Image (cartoon, rainbow, N blue to C red):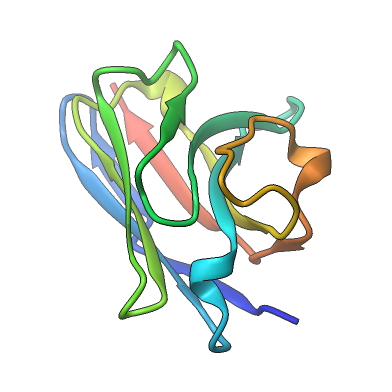
Length: 126
């Protein structure tokens, strides 16, 4: 069992930056691939970024590529999402998730993730 707690969301202006953090409980954090997903108001959940168990492989949605960076610190049981050049369309609830199966693969499929956090809200004003 893994418990995930996100933090770092807030209200910012377009062009600003935010760094989200996701702290995981347990001693097996390095056994999981981690992902960030978001759900804009009135829309379906969508993939944002993922990182494999050792940080050697990452993947990004086209909409955030070049602006967002996912990273992890296995010693601190934490995964991060650095978000730069934020746009109003980035407004969403952001959720981190942990994937137990195939942790060497940074997957995009939310259904493959086993544990989810409660989310943190990011609002970008124009």
